Amino acid sequence: MNPQEIKEFLKSIKYTDIEEMEYHNGNQSLYFKKSEVETVAVPIASIKKIAVEVKKVEERGSIVLIKSTMVGTFVNGFIRDGDNIVVDQKIGQIEAMKIIKDIKSKVNGKIVKVFVSNGQAIEYGQKLFLVDTVSK
Image (cartoon, rainbow, N blue to C red):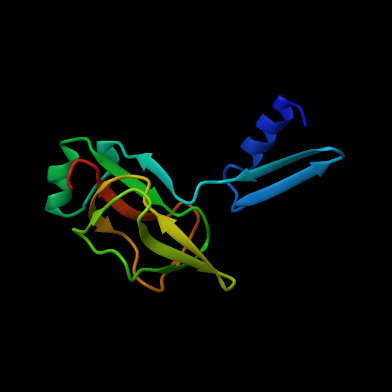
């Protein structure tokens, strides 16, 4: 694969539930792996009707939304609203077809809101956690 083919391939799998892939062609081989949790800075205007505590945090512009990268059943025995988290800390799990995938934090901060409950079916891209990266 040439660099352009690799770029096109990565674009094509970006919004799928494919997590890992290995490609072999003769003496060449490539290995791709997506990150476990997608973090996205959330514009203040898009956050509505969340607790008063969240509104105070919004003003600081330090909100990060953690979304699901796959379809499955959410398992949470780890984190509650108000808990402090650090990078690489397990903050939940997603189970799909008897395979359990850990959700690890990519940021330090305080959980402002947990959007899903234990045992809830979740979709790709669904909101899981709202994190204030300034609070610790």
